[in-house]
Image (cartoon, rainbow, N blue to C red; front, top):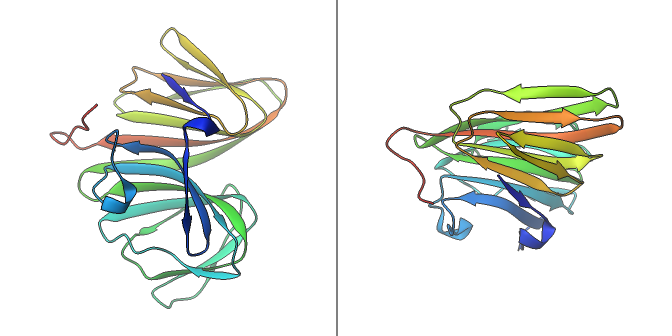
Length: 198
């Protein structure tokens, strides 16, 4: 298990604001080269209307951490994306957004990686979530409050803005304590025969 903090992240500008890359695979891959297996990022949308960068080789999953946005794909009707909601779409779609927010993104290379993005809100009642085996990577991003991630004998307490990254875990447990907390969880599988290099 690796714990990542804002000092480990990489922030770049895009047409509608800034994007902070939390993790990418394989290690050392460059987003601009468009040859990565998967990428997790959080972007600030600072303009009232913006166009998403076309990513035809990728499937995208998006949620908002703060604020709401309306999304339109290929000139279709707008849909409202609220905090904690997850929206999956094809990176090849011509996507326009309206509204200001901070979002959270998972990008998956078509035919080489698959996965899910989920959000969990804890109300201060102690809880334990256990994730299935057979995953290539599990990333947990702490949005607010604090949570503990357990993988085997390893434990990591996450504060807001921190991420735990578990590679090929036997099992991952997420333990919430006596205060409200919110996390984003990425579960990623790399296709057999297409394992990422470490």
